[in-house]
Image (cartoon, rainbow, N blue to C red; front, top):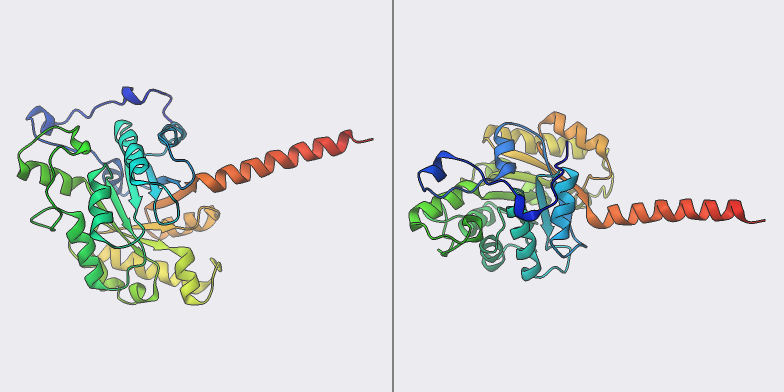
Length: 288
C-alpha cells in the first residue's frame, strides 16, 4: 500500500541501536530490501527537476528515486536538492553519472546520493576505479568530507562516519557493453561492488539486435549476469524494460531484484497522449 503522508518534514526517523549509542547510522531501504531478497524498484527522474518528483514517487509507493545525469540536463544543485528530499522521506536516492570520473562520483555522493550507477563499463580496472571513488578507506580512496547530508550534517569521528557511509552506499555497475558481458565473472568478483545492472537497450544494440527484447541472446545475457552475481553475493538490476512488464517479471523470476521502473517523461507523454486521444474521440462524436 502506498504511503499517504504528504509532508516531507514528517518522515519517520529510524530508531536503531546505533543511534541509541550515538553511533552514526544511515538507513538505505534498497540495500535492506535486497539483503532480504525482495524486489525493489526505482522511479527515474529525467524531466522533473525539483523535489516534487520525490513526493510523487513516495506517494506512489517507490522506495527509491533514480536521477539520470547521463541522459538529462539536471544540474548538481538540482540533483542535490532531490537527494536531500529523498533522504528526508526515507527513500534511497541513486544517481546515474554521465561517465566514470572521480569528480562525478565523489561530488554526487557528497551531495546526498546513497547509490551510484556507472554506465558503459568495459574493464575490471574501471570497476576497481568505481569502487575506489565511491568508498572511503579502507575499501576505497574517496576523499574525506565532514558534515554529510546523509548524517544530518552532524559531526562524527571520521572512522565512524566513513564506516557508516561505506555500509550505506550502493555501488552499481552497468553491464551494457559486450566487453563487460564477456568478463562479467571477473567484474562480479571485485570487492566493493553491490550490484550489476543490465542496460538492456545499449546491450542489445551492441549485440546487433537493437530493441529485440525477446531475443534468446538477451535472455542468455541476463542468465550469465545473474549466475555471476549469485556466485559473488551481488544483486542484479534490470534497466530499459519499463515498457515490458512481462520481461521484467521473467528476469525477476530468474533472480533479478532491482528494477529501473517508471520514468517521468514516458509516463507524462503516454498519459497526455491517452487523454488527447479521448478528447479527440469525444470531439469527433460531437461533430455534425
